[in-house]
Length: 401
Image (tube, rainbow, N blue to C red; front, side, top):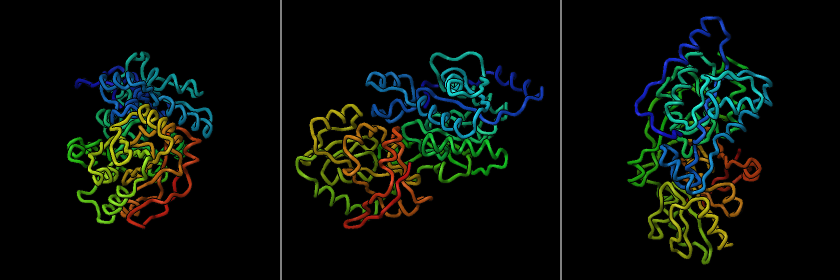
């Protein structure tokens, strides 16, 4: 996501001029461009709901958070290099892509010679504009909804996009479900070139007014083109209904009435888990993680470190979570406070998943996804899971990574 506002400035013309000369000189069209937002997602484990703005980044660092976007981009590029071998990339300079791509072993041309010490939204827009002018076959970027919005602001739908998931929420329909899935989609783009089928996808971000009203919804900012690979690139997040179904409401009341004594319960973000807390007479943190012990809230809007501290003192624990509608994401989007360390401490057999039945039946493909940042844990969480959809009702779903 964006590390600082752009203050309305427009991209400079020097990269455009350089690439216009390169194209006029008959240089081959670059097949892949990459932009990495080094600070994307840093606010997730710190319970900051996003990473936009210098103040948010500073607060995330003060809470002990570390940037993860470069690591996730490196996973993608390593997997891609293993699949396609040596290839030339057009990359944003320095930490925004060029350094990482060279370290992985790609031949790299940078969009400019200078690399900013602190990146901003403007740097993303400048790099995206340069890649548009070079007419890259696919623009691969590591970031979240804020980064996707910056790229769209600069070039609209003029280049096919593919997002390496590295943000906090990722409501937009431009992201692969994991770094490795992004590598497979990029490989398909490289091998198929202009014949790769594309589909329209929305650029979206969280609707803050809806969140204040107790709903999880998105605002649409525009449309772009992405590879038409449904098992690799997920759609836009679906909004929560204004009124939940009777079966789901009854299930949430049942869970609230049957919490085990002396057991620490963690409740993930979302309107479904918020209904369980409401049945307990508590107001949940709609976009955060809360903790309940013996019917009382003992932690609100917890960070990763705060959650781990609670788990250290309560060996008997359970986790109750919902999933991202339209996308089927179970872990890795919107609940980044539930890190691999937290999930490993709780244990896969102590996780309860709640959902409306129609949310599950609408998924295409009918799969739930996990992307915790730990590939070993993701494999452990994969397989089959029972999702509770009503009192004494459940649907068995496939979980994949």
